[in-house]
Image 1 (cartoon, rainbow, N blue to C red):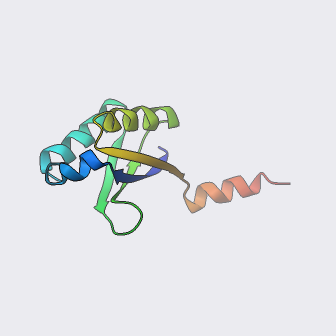
Image 2: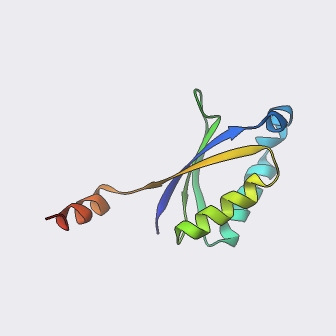
Length: 99
């Protein structure tokens, strides 16, 4: 299943609700949303720097990843940048196809 790296930034509203965003129920709900689209959250982290949180996820397709992200962002607390991640094996397969 494809892997994605989700980079989260909190909106002003999200910063006002910061305690609830890191509550177990919100984190579990985010996982449940991913599951409704056939995905799963592998790991999530609070981070320092340009982004506020990072999640490593798996979804069956780009469309499923995007749909899940839209649902999570619809609450207005977070903005999302998603990166499609490729394993070294996947990259090696791609490189074999280059002429």
